Picture (tube, one colour):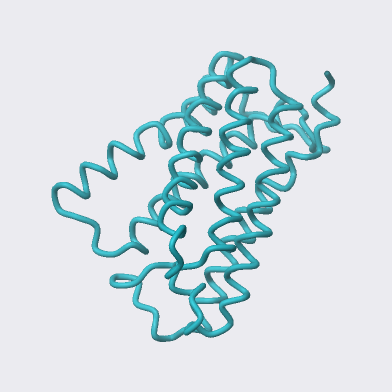
Length: 203
């Protein structure tokens, strides 16, 4: 399959931008928010100003990530990449469900936790697939942050503890951002759905 046809990869970076913009907008609309005490999910509760912005932003970001996971499937060159697309597909559904079940609802903790877990698993395996295809630099940058995210989070939680849910969420988002950007650059190298090629492919 010609990976140039896999334009479904484009929504991946756009989903990240939309999610970050959603958080920034909601933060500006809710001056009571304390990064060191609260959770980003507090933007989605009824008492928050314009909670619909936060919840819809996550639902749309999740839908865009779902398209990205399908783009990974179309552009995959290895079985591991294909497998990782299924994990990222599931993570995308959990991201949408965070908007459907905002903070304070019964399923919220479950869907938000598993969004991060599935994302880490998906990008860790995707990085392994990229490594198998021969791109060492971007494969490691995609794999390693996500692979160490869960054990690192558990170590922090069991020792010093997280100052707030928002700090933990920001750390998780940062890991996902690094893995997403690295994997996207890999597919730019392969001409997957973008009109340009990068020059970062490892020898």
